Length: 306
Ligand code: GDP
Ligand code: ZN
Image (cartoon, rainbow, N blue to C red; front, top):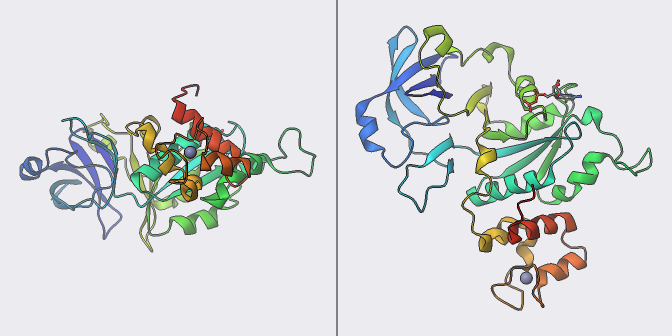
């Protein structure tokens, strides 16, 4: 559920109880190129009493969110083991939605092969966009409307509970990595999703006084038992987005561009300035949302404005 230096908080499958575990030496020798144990790993542990345990084995990971270490000899740094999907959370306002950050998150999800959900919190504050008539489109629609054709978009309010049932249904039975800029209400939302009884799980370290030093800020919460459902607070994703993605691969990470890839006059078309570009034609015809294309083009040119 959480890592503290050499200690790992392990939640038992059968009981709502955690053990603060160390890792057996034999496990340590087998796993050299990756984090030994990471938040999200499924492990076998022995209970040695007094709330402590020892990790004996780690199950193979089915997926991983990690700092890419492909071209280096470094050990990869795992942000979350075994994620099933990602939820990128923004607010309808306060703070204003940050499209470019969302686009970066989505690229990361595409590159990692993780299905992405988009959450728009604070819809209780959602009013028509500036310049729209009083009964016009809400700000969240003006900003996020483009994404609904491709991604599952959830409008929620951690404050009023609106939309939470639908979001819960989308999370059920899965491990979901949650990320977003600060202030959008991520903590409020995780609390709202989290059943009261489980909320204090995770405070083993303060009870034993061990390992107050956290090596990763990722933290997993079990939000339902039937089916077992987890959400992970993964602040580390923000630094990760876009690292290690070659510019020539960028177009593959925009699903809206897929139907046009391979149809340009130049096979190595960047879709930024070349004649005979099928992508830019589709943008002109309105088949690809302009804002999403502009996001692609800015990233492709290497603009680092935001
Ligand atoms: P975090 O930085 O993303 O973890 O955001 P917090 O959960 O700390 O929330 C930031 C601020 O937004 C706090 O003042 C919350 O009370 C407020 N907030 C969170 N969710 C909502 C919401 O759904 N509606 C409104 N109006 N305010 C919210
Ligand atoms: Zn092109």
